[in-house]
Image 1 (cartoon, rainbow, N blue to C red):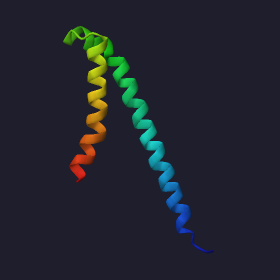
Image 2 (cartoon, rainbow, N blue to C red):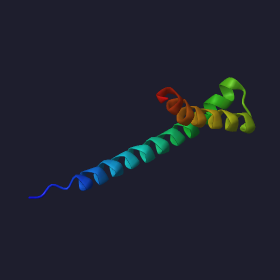
Image 3 (cartoon, rainbow, N blue to C red):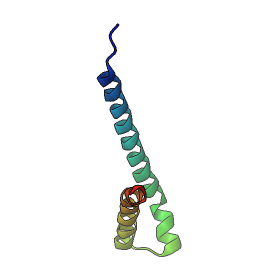
Length: 69
């Protein structure tokens, strides 16, 4: 049997894409579940809740890459 390292690399990339998609989905679901609780506890309106969501998503993406550099 000949080895095909490119095939293993393709499956690793597919696995990473699947993991990233799953984490993105779970993050969005968690935020939608917590939205009513956050609105009540922190007295947030829809606009401020949107800013909070935008900040958290930006912090997750940008904060991780800033730590790696």
